[in-house]
Amino acid sequence: MEKISSFQVDHLRLKPGAYVSRKDKFKDLVLTTFDLRYKEPNKEPVLDQPALHTIEHLCATFLRSHKEWSAKVVYFGPMGCRTGFYVILEGDLNSTDVLPLLLEMYGWIEKFEGDIPGASPIECGNWREQNIDMAKLECRKYADLLRKAKKENLEYPV
Image 1: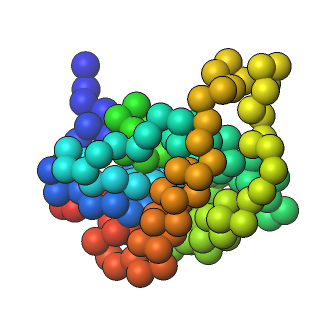
Image 2 (image 1 turned 180 degrees about the vertical axis):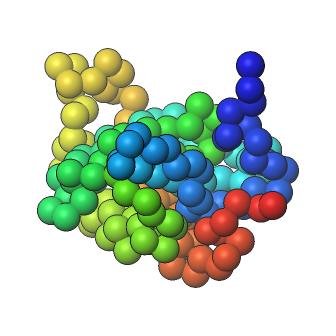
């Protein structure tokens, strides 16, 4: 079997950032997968599971409800290694195209109050495992990084 693209990224050189992971073409349709890398792989502790779960619920809700972007959202979910998330959007996009959207999303999360969307036994198979405070902290740190992003945080290391 061929090695998939995400396993071809040098995780020893990868820094937190927002990267184009891959682009898939289906006739005239292009889907862009973004690697939203919160943690430096193999060097810093991974995301806490309850925080990761809450981030997933909040980001998916924000993106699928966004006035301009909702129709382009295909998927938002965590990486198995718990160092970040993948978001798949319709369009031939690059990291700078989605930075404003990401910063808007993290601003919304920072101000979020109330019940975590989808965190009930009817809506989620592990609804109790949530941590809004840690989720907000992780999102705040990641948003700060994105605000100061340099090329090294927006393009995979070669």
